[in-house]
Image (cartoon, rainbow, N blue to C red; front, side):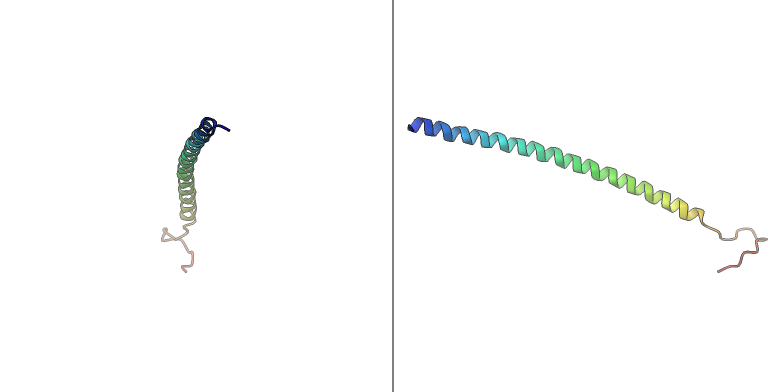
Length: 74
């Protein structure tokens, strides 16, 4: 194998490595953006569920507000 062909082969491997690195960087960037968006959606859904739970607990409020009510107080 000549020196010229070895140098070309080494240069070709280096270029391929650079292309693969660029692909990995782009892939990781897309994944990170997706994770950030997903976490935002989870946050919003959790907040909505907790608000529903708070409304349900508030609806269970059975304290007597009418003075004529004969419910026993705890």
